[in-house]
Image (cartoon, rainbow, N blue to C red; front, side, top):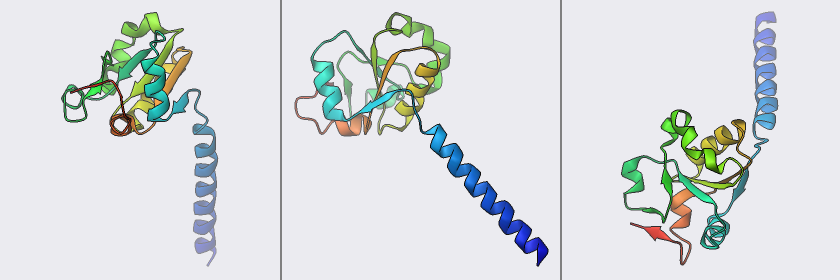
Length: 137
């Protein structure tokens, strides 16, 4: 009976610690915007960069890519971050297929000193539903 209580106690503590970690880990230092907000801002031509972090096959695939986007697959971002140096103080919109890889890339960029990083929620899947989005296929 003591072992059962101990196991239940340990499991309870592990779940509590996991919840606390998730609470703090979700405090991202970047902003996320809807596909509509991103398209509107990108079309305004404010000198921002669209960073697409998908694979080359996805970039040239059925969802297309945002016109003028720079392709750096998320798995290559750490080794190619120097290519983004001129955007350290400018706005970077990060996009992928669904918004998950771009979230990781946005977190990486902000942790490495980029000051205005914006994740595009729903990624290219969402952007493809925005009327007038500047998509190249």
